[in-house]
Length: 187
Image 1 (cartoon, one colour):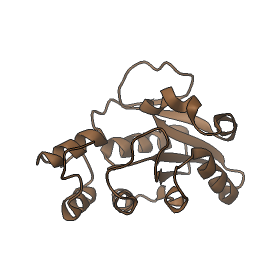
Image 2 (spheres, helix red, strand yellow):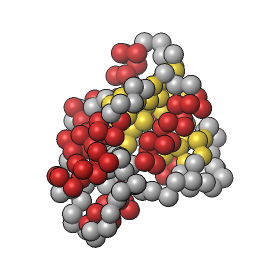
Image 3 (tube, helix red, strand yellow):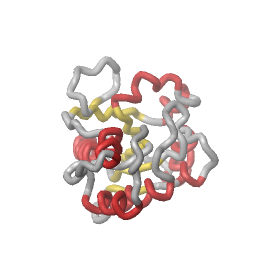
Image 4 (tube, helix red, strand yellow):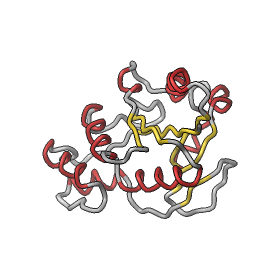
């Protein structure tokens, strides 16, 4: 059995994340894709939305998709969130499953700085999800799909009063509006 772990802040989850996850699932024949929202990513800025809100949006975004699941293990552990800890936890649960780790193209340059990277690269097979459409400069298999959507852009659109319809699933848009997330211009 092959499973994929897709870690990230998902602040907010958007169609770019979901389209690439679906394409990776189909391309590599994964049993499922496990979305793991990070509490605090050691090499990135802290998320804008709370862990609770990001988890709520993630669950809403994948509702009805049986091969997409959410694991909140990183939100339950003390920060920072390390991929190797997540892999070890999921490995203990999943036994002999072949584990792939999905990461965005923007994370490749810092990959070697990840906590216990040497152990991590032995424990998983990395797959890069690339929304840029550029030629890769790394050795990892890559899912290419030009998608010009980013969480940063979505937060800016919300803060400036612009619509985000078609950027995020409708259920995520409703949560953002109802909870008044991303109202202030910032990150």
